[in-house]
Image (cartoon, rainbow, N blue to C red; front, top):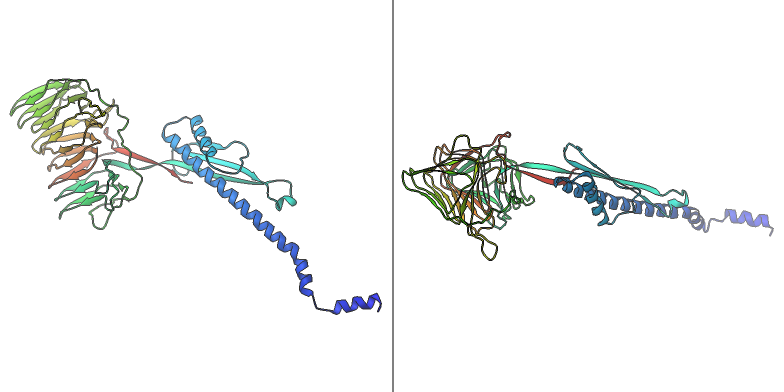
Length: 421
């Protein structure tokens, strides 16, 4: 048999065709698998780079929230990148602060990296380039007049009886309860926005009326007055006690041991600044007012310091028959506050009432204490704030709080850092 005949027979023989087809297709199969592996590696590197950009943008936004300089913001981004795994960067990260994505205060981060892929490198000597961008911003989540720092499992803000609360601003609590803000009684309801809580907010069972924006399961609210310096605990001994019908005038900047104003008594505070009450109680049943022209007074309750760092501050009671005319200062350490109880003091219950002719412009701060509010109809409040542990509205109290955006006694503005792009 000659060679030509052998080749003809092989050409007609169909056995083993699959081996030939498989051999012909093998380069394509191997190439596809190699390309898939390279694509997965490239996607993984892209994801790692994006995660690093996201984290860096959030770190930069936190630095921006702390009023850091451009150099400090960029340093914060770099430090965050150093703590997170990511592909080797090409060049320095680009960090820009300024308006972006609809937010005025934002930090934009752009990263670039290169990745050499084994299969693709057979066809090109250039590594694959990947980029990632992210924007962190300071987002305003509303203005809050009622701030409950209580972080337990009971409700942080409660309405009992037939209390109605119309704030003109928001309320927030760090309570982790399933229903962190509750209403009770047949007529109790809340008109406030936004309403936030670390725990849940039951909008069906509780009376949130109007265009209320509920923010359940939000991040905890920090103490908005945590940076107010601790008051001086130097001793003073003279009390001010006004009997029925008694009158007196004292100047802001004075330190007294206690303050009592009985029914029909009248105390006028002149000047501006803090009025220190050292170790004793404040009990107001009569008239308490600031003189005309005063630029604001803060009653500061403190006391002698104990061995464990606490202070013995007294209790505050403002009775329902009291007529109050109080305005907070607009500058200084106690700006915005008409009442400050030393945060180092043991817990107590602050009772805030007020007669029909009462006018309060400013906030009450008692970080370690509970608030019990029961106002009367006609009680006028301009941006009245309460910052403490649990806050309760009891009886038939009605609170109508007028808080215009241009008020000198602005409520707590809550800003959070969020990844926005």
